[in-house]
Image (cartoon, rainbow, N blue to C red; front, top):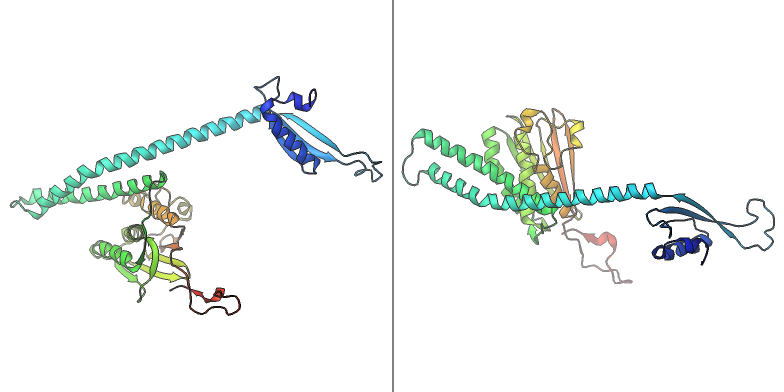
Length: 345
């Protein structure tokens, strides 16, 4: 302790080295990193093992106590690399957090004037203050359409920024899952009819009670339906299915559209990642599926994509949001409901 190994170790590292010695004496292999007292800028990696006399030779140990074998290596370079990686990781996280805060703040500041632009364009489209020449009326329609598209993009960026910054809070409530999903179908219906795509919702005939965020559930259905209609050619079909399976709410949106190539399936679902050629990428921003995935994970669920290029795509969202309640019948002997009697309402 005074002149040997412990004395050679820097004082703050001595308790850890002593604990490693105790673990090794108990028969466990121990590895420890410490600073030598006379070279604090360096690091030593030491591996400790117990060696019992007679184990290898098969003879009597003669009562000799077990010994410890220590292998020591210069770990300075390894420690420096780890420090560099940790520093780079911390810097990357700080930059990502700064980017997220910037996007959240900028998205919020942009929405206010953009809403004014859309509102004034709508006034001109409806000719509330008198007639407009056809040419200017067309410009007002273009401004209103472009403003709406930009507002949708900003809302998606804002929601993603809040999720990344861990500032997005779910407003969980008991609701009928058919209501927000039906509202999403109604919003996309006009888009589907204009494009000549058959939109078919398949919803339960009885209420489907869940504990979820109504706005998030509507946003997920809306994004999936908008994507499906957008990438389905005229004459194709989009089907939305909503159902409950045990504690899970299953939302599936399938289409007969262009499909996704296998090499692109690994990328879609990340922010700003898009599949297909340049003409398909021009139709979106790559935020829709990313937002659906993030909102799904906030609910503790999972999103999966199944697609065949040229045939269509099916996206399934599973959320564990259906309350499971015991039935009235109880086990007479234990006073508990058997597992098989736990059913979804």
